Length: 427
Ligand code: IMP
Image 1 (cartoon, rainbow, N blue to C red):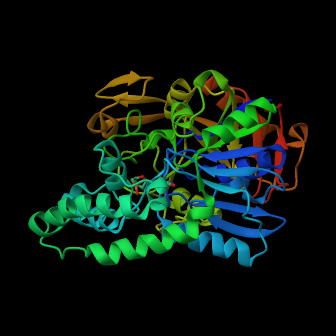
Image 2 (image 1 turned 30 degrees about the vertical axis):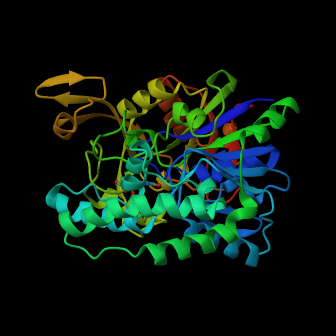
């Protein structure tokens, strides 16, 4: 049985939650491998509508074990409230597991996220203010606190006391903010530890068992490749790798075991937060897409910037991840548009280029070169077979396949699980 990674191929919010929810029906293990509650995965299935931030979207499967992987940063208060809400709605959370290696978001991370953003002024990244950047910074600076630390209250106190001393110096002397109380933070996190202890465990043995049974393993991405700290629009991105490489790193699975990488692309583009976005539409068409698709952040409620499909960025994302197939989501959003545009190249300082520049100041200057395609101007939400799609919709998808050089496997034509066309096998 394969290991499949589901990867955001643009700037996040591509509809990965829906794709994972659908695939998780046949999965045995679902592992969320990066990010934290900066993510918001909307899932609409027979149990209702859910906005998940930390719990893997595979939680609705009748048999899958769902792991919050070592690559994540977890705000325990948010996780507990998410577990409570799922339980209240009758969802079984007994197969939820938290990797003891996952780092925790601490109160100073959230404070520092806000203070650092404020200090950036006009250069603010537009973070979700959930403490993600500061938590990952601490992880690599070896100042992190991990989920497993909560299981040893004495060791945890000692580590927290040492780290908090350092954080309080930054809070008070750099930002003139109030210091945090060791007692308060310690007690609060001990309470979280008691509540979460049944879920926290070593996960490598679970993986070994899954491989020995030949289980189907799904690696659930958060955010998108263009927000990656190495390959995204740095520094306007997030702090953990949303890529296929990040999937193996953040779950503890050997790269040689990964045999499918599904790239999730929206049929257009959106971005939330600051940073370059060559195909952004600051006009009526952009507003129309935003309103039709209700493009407002699941986590922050911020309006998302919307624009045409960018095939230069899409191909770059494919190069980074080596997708074995594309899932094209929200195709139905384009239903009403008479003409569609796809960006097939950039014009930079008078020259046409076909690569995605690393430097954001260059990317800001890139003018999209568009190709126009006819729209289909009818509703496709009830279509379940590829051949029944209007010819213009097939033409659009086939052009995306050509431009990205990757076959389309799945097409989503609506928010619910069944509004999906399986064009080619994923497994
Ligand atoms: P952070 O991850 O909160 O530090 O935010 C850094 C950048 O990534 C900001 O532009 C956010 O808007 C963006 N971002 C983070 N998570 C998501 C997501 O799940 N979807 C879309 N954008 C995101």
